[in-house]
Length: 202
Image (cartoon, rainbow, N blue to C red; front, side, top):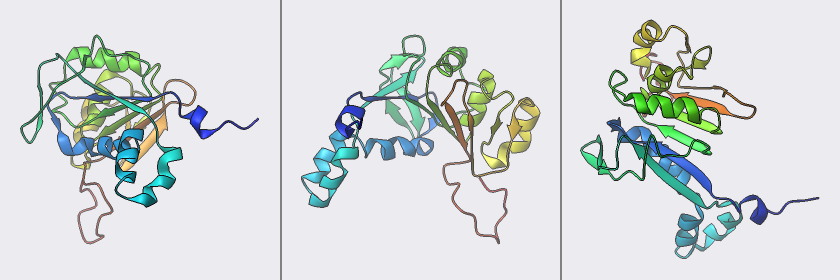
């Protein structure tokens, strides 16, 4: 029996975004996901008729902005985001969680508890830059392969020796239940490096 795209896409994707003193550029992937939301595709198709062909693939999406409190949360460069949930109130069974890069020495304990619990139910956790060390601090990456800002790999290996740190632009490993995945990436500008440049650029 064939399932239609309409039935497959009937349940909105729930995407949690952690905002806690993070680098805003590291969360650029959030906007890329949002560009495939039903809301954006329907809006743009009114301006660009060719976008009509994407409508069957668009998804309803619910974005949850998670932080220590519901007060405005700072992100670089001096941008303030209004959270929708705290670490205590956010659901644990999300489709995707995104983490940007904070100062990994200063992430709140409540965020680590949230990540530990959510990793048992959330399908994909995506971390960029020092967001990989945020995950590592929670213990989720113990025994896993991962990467982080490549300028900080030596420090990451010293602080989180239970993680198999990789000198790669990005790396994926299995999550903590069947079908779950952990994605980690270097810095937000970790595109293909010119071979003449230092290969340890982020």
